[in-house]
Amino acid sequence: MTDPGDLRPNEEAVELEPASDASLRFIGTIRTPWRDRKDCPRQGKLDGPECQLVLDPVWHQALEGLENYDTIEVLYWLDQSRRDLIRQSPISDGQTFGTFALRSPVRPNPIGTSMVKLVRIEKGTLVVRGLDCLDETPLLDIKPDRCAFSPKAPDKPGSRD
Image 1: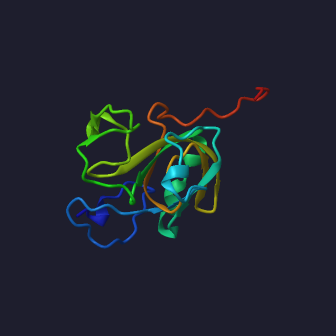
Image 2: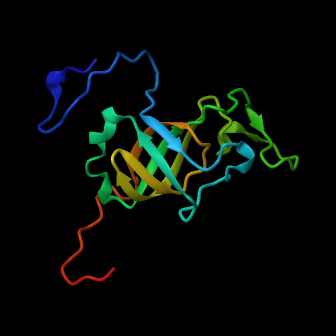
């Protein structure tokens, strides 16, 4: 348990129920055009359709500063995935691989990740391109692009797009 007195200047915490060992907190819901696995792309594309990361209101202030990034990493819980396969044949071509050698959504702990283009933020909802998950997938976390730990530089006077 973290002591509320351990906050750094300008940090803010919210009261949450105590988490049990290894439990996850969903921070919102992902909205995509795909309601069936057969329609969902195998990999997201940065020019794919706009999707939404709808955050629960308690997390809206946690978005401050994220607008400074072009690319973000999204982590989500693949709640409709099987969790019991240790070897898989992803393309039905007879080749079989261990689950940990694949990016398949079928895994013991089905956590999905996607690097997506941040299009805009609207009142606690992030509009993004590049997702590859079903509509109403639980959202776990959002992080700036791991290769761009610094926000994009502000435009210089006279610079061109």
